[in-house]
Structures are given as structure tokens and as C-alpha cells.
Image (cartoon, rainbow, N blue to C red; front, side, top):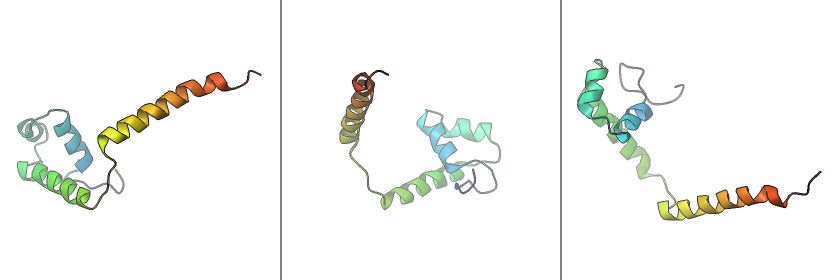
Length: 85
């Protein structure tokens, strides 16, 4: 948690809140589970993530998936090429 942004007045990281939302937890369920949190805090997490991503550049997901498949294939085949001791 050191150096990670947290919601004001809590020890809940923005990453944790976004993870809950990404896994289908509703805002109401989050607020109910964490009484110190308000819906506005969750909106602030979304705004923070949005602002943070504005200046970032990304590889398109399709290209990244192809690259990962290539790397995985290469890593799986690589040990068979090594000489036996």
C-alpha cells in the first residue's frame, strides 16, 4: 500500500476499489461493506483512474494478446530445444 493512492479517510486503495467494480461488485454493495466509504469516494476513484490513463499510451489489446500468445508458445517450446545433460 506504500505509495499507492487511497480514498480519503480510509486505507482502501484506488486499485482495490476499481478491482471490486471490475469483478462486478456494485457501488451499493461496496458502500454497505465499508461504512467509511461514500459513493462520491468511488466516483473519485473512477475519476482518478480516468485522469491517470489520459497521458498513458497502450498497445492495442488485440496486438498484446497476439504477442503474449507468441511468447507463451516460444517459452513452451524452448526447453525441448535445450541439450540434455
